[in-house]
Figure 1 (cartoon, rainbow, N blue to C red):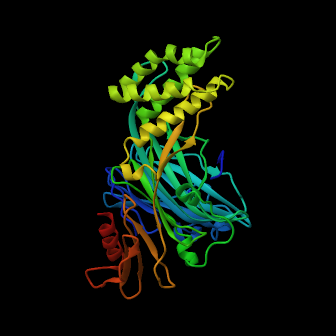
Figure 2: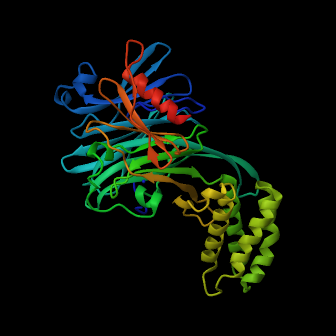
Length: 450
């Protein structure tokens, strides 16, 4: 068991990715790259497996079912056979490696943890990561989605190399001493391992600037409050999160995607050059900027368009020149780096998006020349809920976050979809011999997704 600690505290669907993925109502089923279907489920040892150890037969365990080419096998998720109760399992598939990641809440008495476990067909299960945090908060319905960013970067020896990073986006509902909140954390995968420097964000604060606190609003049903959703974009470059803000009871959507790797690599290189030029030299900030310009702009031209490299280099060096000589040079370089990342990221946004988007740091290397991990966050909107039934209601969100539906079922599947700032009238999908309830929910989801 490895413990995954945050360094700061702030976050039946069909998801179509290029590798393919099938997502169940609670994110417990996915389609892998080779046509295999993965499904995770919770139950007692004796319900899920024949001939369990007698002393453990009544314990709650997790099982991973793998179906491929007409064959199915079931494997016990290691570490779940003990007295701890495993709840709300979900999974996702990393398209770059076809590795499966499982997440669940483990509860024993008043102690509650979130656990993350990788699995691959070749290597089996890896190490379980246990999230540090409030061990006494209850963690409901964790949901996972994976994204991948492929880019070029400048290596330490100056060569240009291809690189990629996978990010696991995890969201859940947390009820603890700090109140009822939706929490979100992005987990960066590097060489198959999860970086241990993730940050946990209050999803309401990330999306709206106002953190959730205290008891949740009574305008939304508890079941809906505890069901945050997250799904990947069609191209796998980002995710959309949809959740009920605990404070206001409004439905909030947020888009999150990686800041372009080439931009981050260029900004990291510019920062490192400034620090190297200024080390052990009695130079003014203007002299440091002038001495560093040629190297920085050449690095930019290798990764970015020439005109963009020139513009960002001038912006970066202007920030260095205007910094206080009494300020530590590394801090001045950090600030200049943040400026050009924000400027560079804003250039690929639509004009209407620029005031709604921001860049946040999600993980960081301890090496002064190492690369930080950054996400661009865009507030997708907030809307009051329409009148809804008392039973279970599903949140269905498009891959851009611009369309949302609320769906439920009785004798039929019924839904209301977003229209501008409001909601459509209630609409009905009639069930029958050729249309199951799950099929009807999928049709609503497809309508929202397109």
